[in-house]
Image (cartoon, rainbow, N blue to C red; front, side, top):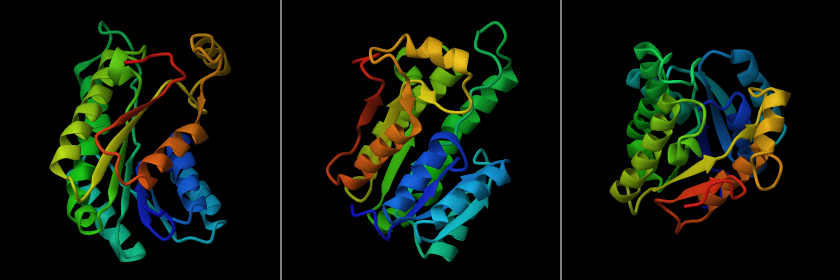
Length: 242
């Protein structure tokens, strides 16, 4: 796919990895709909950066746990951009607790609902439009979805579920839509303290954690290649290999 002139939706595109993906897609010439849940100020900052590349953009607030709100994302994007070619499912949360003893039923549900059910909702709501345009889906999973990680069993389970969903949809939506996933190791974002970043860097073969832009670059690769589907691309510098 030539990304230039295509219309993309990035969930959680207001900050972190999602912001880097949104900006890189705009730099490639795509029009970008930036979804956000609560932080409208950050979404506005992302939009301002996107506008510098001379492409169309819009910000859309929605809680992706609710299918009806995801359908509104679809309709607003089609109305403003004229169609949808790319869906990047990036939104995710980790929850306040990491150990089984303290994870509550409500926290489990919140993490699963956002990280897995939200991805399902987006894929389902966008299916017809993506089929029509022979579009692409890239889901953001995690190294935790393959080896457990340290963020908690709820997070690991949700990200493993994203991988399973990716495999299933790659078969179901072929040949109209390619469906792939990216499984990053720890990412250098504002959500991680300097102390934690140093600790995580020491656990990786390269002595550093991955940048947001390196994840965005991987997403772009999966969008531009028309013969890759059903793949999970690890971006962890060899920390975990399977």
